[in-house]
Image 1 (cartoon, chains in turn purple, orange):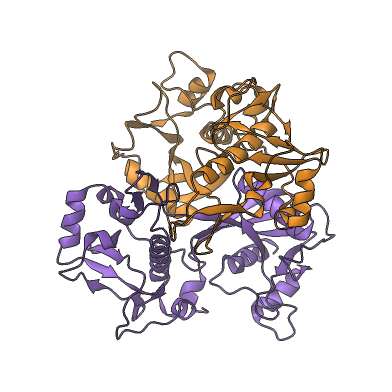
Image 2 (cartoon, rainbow over the protein chains, first blue to last red; image 1 turned 60 degrees about the vertical axis):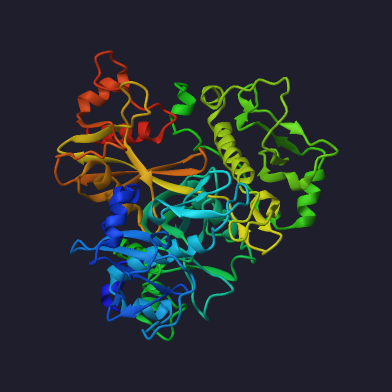
Length: 297
Length: 297
């Protein structure tokens, strides 16, 4: 996770695949691509990646494979079609299958991004075999980019759940918090799901008030990151706090404090005496903090 | 929809309700709020608003009403708890029930924002009576902010579906397109759902390439808007096109052209000779275009 290649961007952010959406709704072209002898597929083991060197393992598509059990991911740089197998439980093979946190230090940034997309899609299919409207069985359609109910004809699309993650700023310091489940000394930016009826700016203000009791304005978007656990879209922002008095929601936050630039620099340097341990380069919070720090110079 | 009050912000963006999320997971406090004689509720007719003056109609909560059939929206400015009824089919009463587009010209910006939140939440409940994982029945929990499956215990949360909507810019002009379903002469910014595995910037670049064949960089976030049909979050951006040659996906776009500042000003002025009709103030595209135009001065 300290690989300089992957730390230039947050994890999962560098998927550059041409998704070829028009082929998804063209059954003839889709069948031709699936039957192309040069086509390949990515399989997961459970939801973990199968890895070959610094890439996700690519397999030729077996003769007896069924198109309905695959999603079209798109086209590789060399033009070859690439699919993902939609079965959730994949028999153990001989290939190296590290867990995802290890994978992040092995895969190139582009391949980690591709893995994130595949993981979210495979997980969504595995957990959406039934129709939320009527309870009937659903089947993949549009090359694995939606599912349709046999009984009531409702169509369901993969979820992407927007989450705001934000640094509140007050007099040259930013608010860092820790959740009870964090590793010792780890602090990060506060975060929460966007709710129906909210703007991003409204969600940032609500979350900071709910979790830390502070009012903010001047919310600014900084960057975004897909976070495939299972399907979040992290939207990183800064905001200006009106006051530094904190009232913590102790269900959400075990502790929080206003961190100075020196304290953040010490955390990034990994100083033993640092007040906290910074979020890892995989996390958008790491990049948000770095961005903020650069703005202070 | 030309009300100056509502045109300062895109529609549905001004919900300022204190959502009181801690009460959602505190059954004793929730029951107390529901039984508070000062508590009130909002009901929809189908998914249309019931209106009283420039506000959504508020009803006292009937003695025989069931908490499980309501979502806690939060607390009004005067401290009273406010709920939404979760039944989808609401018997016809004597109150004025215009359709939503008419409502937008009647409701204050704050009330239109509240309506958007209620509409998305009520619609989501109505369409999620069953568990996508196992097909079993689900019931509302957490004061109507999630549903739980009786059979497999899976918890399901309301959807918020991020959509990018963007102006591609090239040499002082921006790309406007029209979908076949638009009213005559209407053009707007291009838009599309964010897919699993994408950043916002990646989604903007993919959509512009898919729909118009242009490559872009320097994507910038401008503003966001909840769009409750049924649960979109519009994320408005600008991007710099590398070239102005267009290759349209005619399934998505009937036509597109690069609009000059003069052409956009004429559209906003409502000139009969204008090349196109601008998107209405309800739509974030209207505000995105206005923002871009102001930057050109």
